[in-house]
Image 1 (cartoon, each protein chain N blue to C red):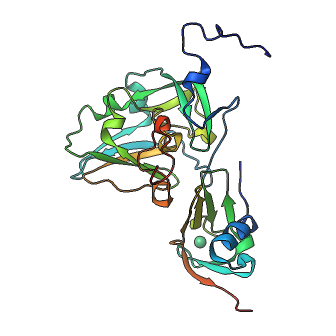
Image 2: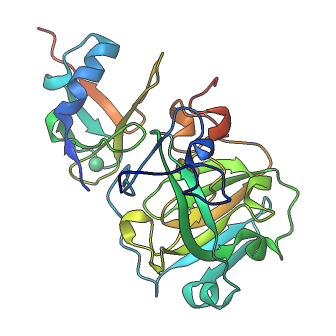
Length: 199
Length: 85
Ligand SMILES: [Zn+2]
């Protein structure tokens, strides 16, 4: 398609208004990876929430699938400067998973199969802002995109949306994750262009 | 999507340390394997360089280049063996 008219996006804001500063629109879905893709079979898959005193809530794959699913359509923004609009996911809201978790902690560390970690404030995982996603674009989530299940926190740079999510550990004090300990921003708001420490 | 060999790090490391790393051997802190730079498996599509041990796949070295700084993590290297001329 060569011509995109101003009315192309209908009543939605134009694509340009939905691009945070310094970002460009990607047509494809780039795969970024810091290591080998972990092979996680759904029969072995588990997801655990651990609060600040070590109480654990664990779900296996069947239990996750039995929870009410949501189908968020969201824009995603990678710190390497590509953005993708209207990505369609299916997954379980973190509000659902945190419903019975007793906590006074303010921070969370997300751990993935394969060893990746990322930190963010607990409040950014709640109130309809984050999901454990297991379908993308109507298909089961491919391993290269974090399948069988990944965290989806689209309002922050996409490195926070940890692939192959395995557990979320609540913390009283903030600690840096994999990229946050090597120069990347602790929060990572794409609209404030918080890419690096000090931004 | 896979890795490239460690020589991709020669330029960035020389920029930071002023040393030619192509002859440097790093010992993996996880398994003890002594890896020449070229044998490291570097994942470079990530937000930074992640160099992994060819024997155990643990991280040996990480490097991020921001517009104004370089950040280097060598926790995964027990030692670096650097030839002196
Ligand atoms: Zn090793």
